[in-house]
Length: 338
Image (cartoon, rainbow, N blue to C red; front, side, top):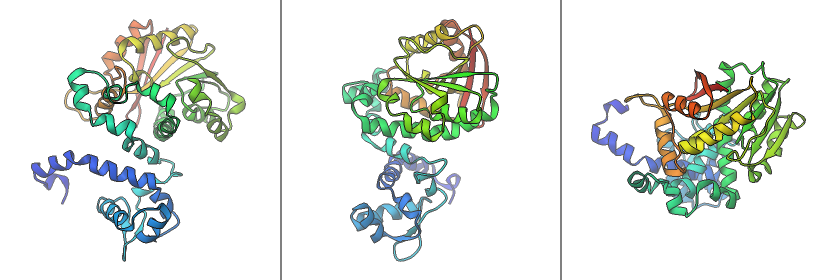
């Protein structure tokens, strides 16, 4: 029975219990079930032994996930991968394993359980629950920070292909990736354009872990790493300044400050490329509206924005928004100059 054939009561009940599915997927990702099943069909008993899990409880998890297309039960409680489950494998080119773990773990899952607080107060439930901001938390919890960066890399693999398909970086010589994490995006762009040089800029606790990513993309000799705060200054010398999912973390005042610091580092011919989702008007569905709720819960004033709101941000930062380019993914390229 497809969704349109279900009663309204059943449809709404499925939505309400959606977090059951999310936690089940997250648990399977933490156990590494998909990676194990890459070796071939295995019994639930074998999976339980490999993951040090209770066989009966694990079977109940696997049976449920198989009922929604994640894994397939064959016979005698044996399981195999499905095309959907393959995306939970660590080495899949569009892996969501790290994202499944991240969204099911305490730093995301517990604040979302306090969304009521955020809606009532307009303040992040994360700060209310943990007693500190999300980025302060990541500084002092390196394992959670690692999962966060891995998840961002998962998104990057899809988003960056969509960006490269519609935007020509050949006129540039040096790209500055502002808040660029471990350098996955910069690595992909420099691989695509061998003449480019890169500057990877982020806080020290992030930059100190970027070397493996730069080596993976074979760009160590073409990429300078700089640590610092984009609230204070960003490196000069770039033809293009990239900010992917950076502006949405902050309220307007701090977002404008970041953009102003980029403007100060730019020369007269530099471009700024803000890579974000854009909220569509009215009842049009879109990932940006759900992500906006995540920003409400997780970040200090963070939010997704409409095209008009980006125009206003750019103007207040002393920048001119020159064009908005849609991609095949949800992410957009918001281009500007001085």
